[in-house]
Image 1 (cartoon, one colour):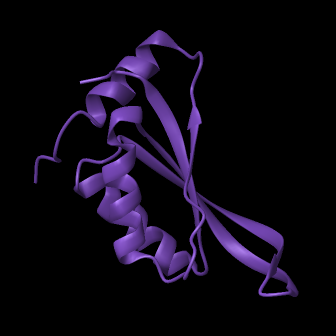
Image 2: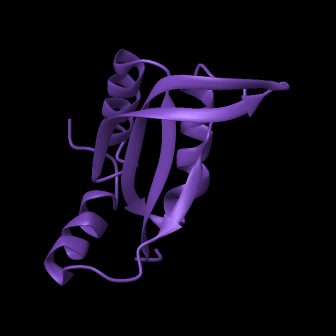
Length: 110
């Protein structure tokens, strides 16, 4: 399996949805860590400008898991077109990156 690590970002409309999604992702073994932050988003949707509070999920995982993670998010997301983007991690603490790769290398032990 490719050991390349990345961050996948998505947003949720409520804190409860973000926490439920983040928890499910980690429990499913699709990420080592998910961080949730409150943000304010400005965007145009269906011709209307929106200014909305949202919850940003920063999902630390393996690049090889992206397709499965994207499908997992789509199945559970409340948005018609959720933001799901992958950002490469090009450098970082070697110990942290080893932990991240190991933490998202398989299904959670529950």
